[in-house]
Image (cartoon, rainbow, N blue to C red):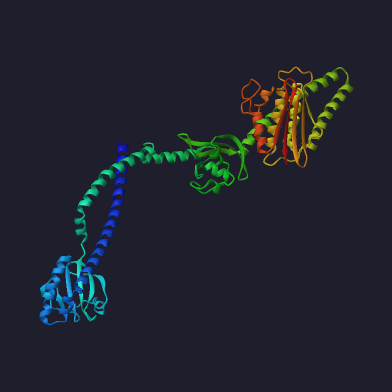
Length: 525
């Protein structure tokens, strides 16, 4: 019932608007009709006055004796009737009326203040208000055959009143009103039905509630959300997005380029396909975004970006990759030192004190040499700690991890930091370790090299593990793809590929099944 009432109200409103618009149009038409009618009466009055003024009988009798002057009215009155004038008055040069529809006025003097120009041989028309209403008059001088002015002819036509105009147009008004009622009412109902369908049969209060709920839902999301229409105007910009982008004003309805000049959201309108898990530099921020086209009935009507500040993601990545590796390193070192303590204790019990002391010095020297090398050449503690942990981890697994003695790292490429390098190096080494899972090599070796010059930074991780087939190597950077039959695999190399793309780097792979794999990553500084 409410929905029907809503449509009925909308129909009534539209119908009222149509009728009101037509009413205004009608007033304009009536005004034009009145002006046209007035102009027509001016021309008729002018013709009537000229007709009388050019009659020789009139010009001769005006200057004749009184008997001749009295005959002027009998000459003029038939002309007035033929031309349909309300009055035709002939004045002599003393402004004495010689003709008039009212006989009592004949012989009286006219006191009109606007007749002076007519007595100076000027022809013109004007409007004058009288007891019967507004009259359109024409004033024409009477010139005799001696080219002397002997009088003035004044013809008047009464303008119709508004009610008379309506009365004269009542048939047309009735027909038009009937058509307006029929077609206007039908059109209003059709338009109201169409609008109702466009609004998904929702009531105004339901639409308002949905709008409020939608806005608050987006504002309650932990992720930032920005949406634009097909003309690149902003339609959604939630509170999280404002916080990340440090925007405080209302930006709905503004062009996305005016608010965020370096956005990549409009390109989704051109690509017409989604882009997931892409790192971007926006307003000097590193963000991880998912950008998706908005489609309605197969047509792209906009695009939406859901993103979060990469800082939080990096912290999580560091925790998952770096911190987890360090915890593993502590466990490995604890196990390794227990084995070493057992070895030392056994040598002492056997009385080989010198051997025990030599063993202690040897172990300390190896550890100190690695620590000093990394401290000197790798200028980031997170990377150094990661490499130490991976060396210890390799020893536990029976894998020799060798770090190139020429390795050097001081600065990171543009848009990248130590979090990204922890992910790259950590995942590459772990993949190298995993390559020995089903391998029976006597010598399991992983080689790591980090070299940096003024122009180039390169990372090399090489192993002699199981290697990969060429077909497998084509898909290793795809999310979820893995050569290991385990869950939660296929993420490491995908993340590495994303980071390399963000840093405008290159990644190359050389692999041979059963002989090993080498990853080379290069960045131009």
